[in-house]
Length: 111
Image 1: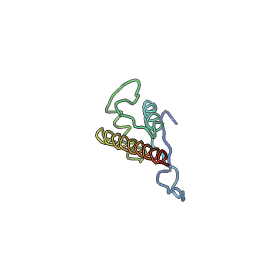
Image 2: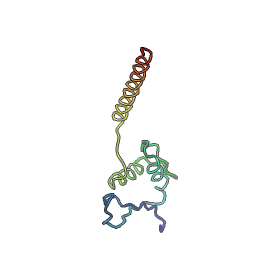
Image 3: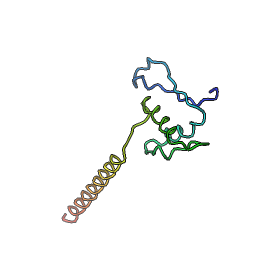
Image 4: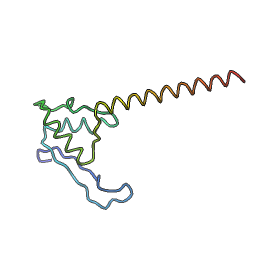
C-alpha cells in the first residue's frame, strides 16, 4: 500500500464482539519478507537472526520488525532456554505415552 508493507488486524476485538475498527501497522517494503516469515511460521518458532531482509541482513532491523509485531500482539518471545525446556517437557510426555502403551499391552497379554 503506497510503497509500504501493511499488516491489518482486529487484535483489539474480542472473538465474539467486533466493536473496534480494523487497525494496521505499516513497515517499509523491504521488511515484507521478514514479516511474512514471522506470520506464516505459526505454530513454529523463528529466530530473529534467521529472518530474510534483503537487500541488507541487518540484525537491528530484524529486531525492530519483531518488536513492532510483538507490541501489536502478533508474536510471543521464546528464549533459547525456554525452548530447550519445552522440548524436554515434550520428550517427557512422549516417554509417558510410550510407558502407558506398554502397560496397556501387558494387561492385554494377561487376559
